[in-house]
Length: 161
Image (cartoon, rainbow, N blue to C red; front, side, top):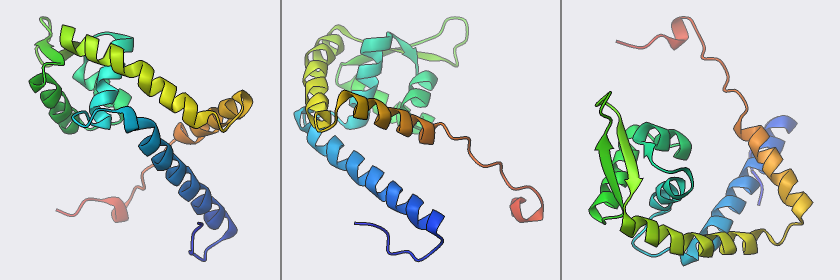
């Protein structure tokens, strides 16, 4: 299903591509993550996966990697810590920084879960050839890394006090 908006050709093309991208992402995510245990959210899985493959990270690094706000990431890590899957430790040199690590329980949990998620995602993408998967990844990265438009300056963008 495409857009019902009647704008310029560029707007309609962009909206139709966006709708397809978002619908595909939601559809694949919902099917691929069926193996995700009910007690773990997709965001919590993202934290556990990052820690499994990257090792301990600061909360700010995790927030940047997962495109989450600092407050949202804190809530995610709070819940993982309550479940005994991660631990937090303040940096000795700069106490403003908090390093998050997997616990033994967390490492065992994500090490068991990740292969099942990876297999599920591979199954979802088996509809595409390897070359098509590469092209899709390249196109998504190109759109995702596009520089944001510069903020407007002048009276229209001045904050209202």
